[in-house]
Amino acid sequence: MSDVAAIVLAAGRGTRFGDEPKLLARIGDKPLVRHVVEAAVGSSADPVIVVTGHRSDEVEAALQGLSVQIINNALFAQGLSTSLQAGFSALPATARAVVVLLGDMPFVRADLIDALVDEWRERGGPSALVPTFQGRRGNPVVLSRALQAEIEGLSGDIGAGPLLRGRSHVVEWATNDPAVAQDIDTTEQFAKHQR
Image (cartoon, rainbow, N blue to C red; front, side, top):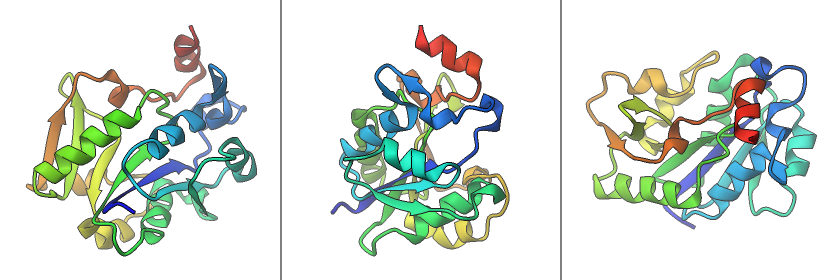
């Protein structure tokens, strides 16, 4: 077990994507969510916690055979904050930090996750390490366990972003990897990545 775990947020409805479940849409030979989870499993982060909610049975079936801990968030309809809280509540006592991955970012690779974790350690374990691409903040982010109490106070459809704004102990890490800025929200974005 590592001192840095991974949480994959895979509970949302993806309403901007249309009627089909976004996380189950196939890129190449596998569902979008499996790309993300395989990257997490292939990284140094351990354990890998996947938070499911909307169509959880199908999302969990898409992850068959992967060494992950599934947490079903019954409150997923109340927003992203509840999934982040569910993931944090499942962290082992040994976890000093967590890499938070979004289930709709299929181009993130294990080596990028490892680079983020290494950088977090090298910087002395800041409150958060946030990747940037061309000056814009992206994902996944590394969050310190020390933020857990504040995360538990969040509500609605927000992640940790508001907690990180204006905080001095947040480190931005510039990368040339466009994956940190490539999430899939709409069928148009999906079609573009299919080509």
